[in-house]
Length: 250
Image (cartoon, rainbow, N blue to C red; front, side, top):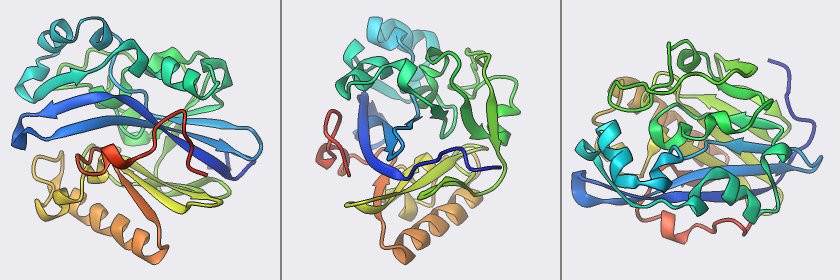
């Protein structure tokens, strides 16, 4: 794959897509996305949160998707939708140059069809599925009509921006390293490591636990080698400490 970006990461915003409580351990997790802006004014959106129907009627949507077997929505409003989060940064859907789907579970893929004309970077293993994974075998969503850039291995999509192919949590799970001017190397594990405790729990419940263990260890070794800040996918302890849009990490 040829580099997709001309510029280097200049700053990064954490997008707040809402709060969810997982029945296991009653842990409360933030639903996050990221906006990375390069020094060439390119905007890259990673993940899009829950479907908009959860902001309209969370209980009805939960019942429709059988999500109540896993947990419950604590707070998802229209302010937690991708367009509103981007607006906090002074951006709109037309400003997005590239969208990345870390994988296609319900809390990451919900607004995937909301950016017409924007190419989608995604693991080939996810895009090969008849429909996005969504939740609990329902696979209610169709693939949007877009240009898909399929990842089959680790790849640098631009200077200072690496995408890692780390299947385990999902068949085509991705993680990311962005090298920011002041913050330095920043590893975004997404759900390859949802929280630090998942390492000790041996990634129980993953699509493929053995692959999840292997790639989790690989990502943490990369973070150690590069002295990177690590932002986990759904860490109850870390989420409250992260700066959210409209603030930036630079």
